Amino acid sequence: MTAQRIAQILRAGQPGETVTIQGWVRTKRELKKFSFMEVNDGSFMANLQVVIDQDFPDYANLLKQLSVGAAVSVTGELVASQGKGQSVELQPSQIEVVGGCDAETYPLQKKRHSFEFLRTIGHLRSRTNTLGAVFRVRNACARAIHEFFQERGFLWVHTPLISTNDCEGAGELFSVSSFDLANVPKTDTGVVDYSQDFFGKPAYLTVSGQLQAEVMALTFRDVYTFGPTFRAENSNTSRHLAEFWMVEPEMAFCDLVGNMDLAEAFLKHIFATVLEQCPEDMAFFNQRIDDTVLATAENIINNGFERITYTEAIAHLEKATQSFEYPVAWGQDLQSEHERYLAEQLFKKPVIVTDYPVGIKAFYMRLNDDGKTVAAMDILAPKLGEIVGGSQREERLDVLERRITEAEMPLEELWWYRDLRRYGTVPHAGFGLGFERVVQFMTGMGNIRDVIPFPRTPLSAEF
RNA sequence: UCCUCAGUAGCUCAGCGGUAGAGCGGUCGACUGUUAAUCGAUUGGUCGCAAGUUCGAAUCUUGCCUGGGGAGCCA
Image 1 (spheres, protein in one colour):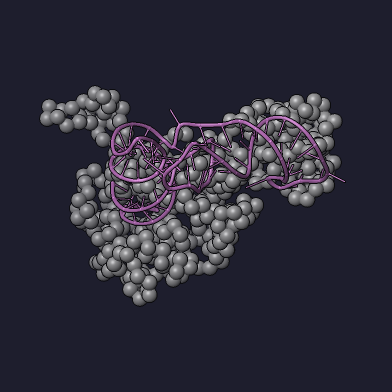
Image 2: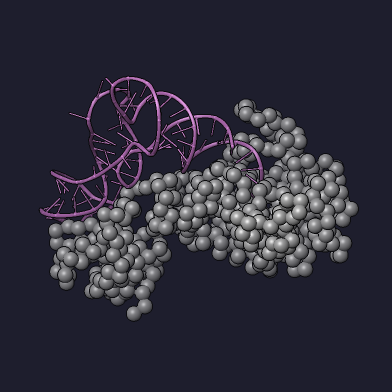
């Protein structure tokens, strides 16, 4: 008999059905004449309760083996529960302990654990209620992202993880090399001889798929990337990872407004889909992690995002009654405290800030007619800060080349990127969305290390 | 990388110069259907590491390591 998933049984199971479940014991309560065992198979927040009578064959010995964490296969009949808290429970006819679990040394207990401790047992923490819910929601987010783009005719393009351009200048890079690090080839002048390395030149893990996504957008119009990205920054915060997932749509024949419209519709779709597909998990987060996540999700889905220019944002900040640690001045980048003030205090919802000063943004962002600002847009989310960063791209070859030179970027290496402006150039735009930050925002989880199964951060890559 | 707080039992913490503690967990037992069951007993320690001060250090000092929170960098 094929095993059924516990989610299906708890949602639609009827008394009288015979089912087999396969999962792990979450908790067990022994009484005099019978025992309750709760089994979880990862498909659902709640467990399926199995009631084992003392007359069950080999009762005493069996119960010893049914310790928390043990893997079991149980066949039996669903019956209406006599207790509160669940409508059906399983009356077993057969229980197999597939893999035992030593209760003396098993680190997970039937109590709340700190997330700090759970990070030290990364191979077991997904078995907890919270992390289990996180990873189901994460999956639902990923699915919603693909759905959103696929329904709109976007092509999912796979951009390379290994890059020989540090074009975006987005932070420190991880080097990729096949050299024996103990014996690196050097030239006569003593510098590393990359011509002997695997790619014949320095190579890195990618910090963004954007430049390649632009290539594909100028063929397929609407494309998106969704994959891992790497930053070797020594960042130690609750919002940064050395390896994280990023979604980067890129659209040809599209300006900044179209870009903002898409980003807003995109976030609304993700939230709506997750609420629909993981209501139990979201209720759990609202109850146990952050009692504003459901209201926030409804707010995102039902209300338009605030849209202001950078210049207007500066004006708002200058009028603010609260004082800031960092001074507010046109031309300076917004600090965390400024972003939080705008999103949390002033508007209390996501804010799209556009048209930043040219001096603080990347070379590829389109120069506005005023010559002082670029067609950039950041979406600032309450509690998280920047969740989306995007722009309309500079499609004019002469302007782009000037900006590359001013930014002291290698003009030669970007020959193929400049070629796009030479052969059939077109206004185009796109943005990058930090996937983990969306999951954080959705679930209310305070630390980004708890929304990715195996976090990579400075000095930490154990699992 | 900077600022700041913290490392004591498997976990969460108290103790803050004089014999190392509690709750939870584990184990054993009791128990009329339990929901992190309850009740009783019991088990459990290189007090992060290294040096120093002291008759005596978990406790005071210094350095290092690790973790949390905040900042910078950014998504």
